[in-house]
Image (tube, rainbow, N blue to C red; front, side):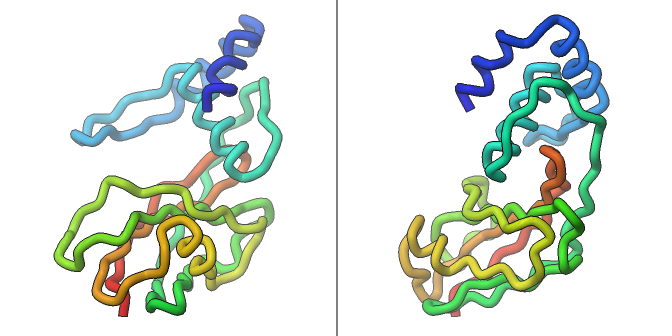
Length: 172
């Protein structure tokens, strides 16, 4: 992230203006429910951070606005030896990838989680289900029966992410 922030300084005035125009057309909602538009800097960093997470090269010129389709359903299968998520639309469209965000293990009684971390990025046009067990175990340890894991799924296309589909499951 710091590399993308530093790279902003190397852009020309015309490139910065392009990013500012794109940012003005992108709205976000903060934790209090207020909507705002992105500055050029925020837009540049957001798209390039997504591209880096997906394993793609960063870009200097602002692209046209893309709205990836959202994940419609996500049905997790979660045990101590299996962690997969069946999702629709499947397969994803050409060039689209699934970004999977997960939480550390929490108490089963918990109903809200703000600590979701990027766990995996699928291959382009991947088909359901997404197998997350190996990546989850490497990052957080073996899922423990009775704990809750929160998940959020977005689709990625050309640096843009869709709105999230958020769910959770208790390890069976």
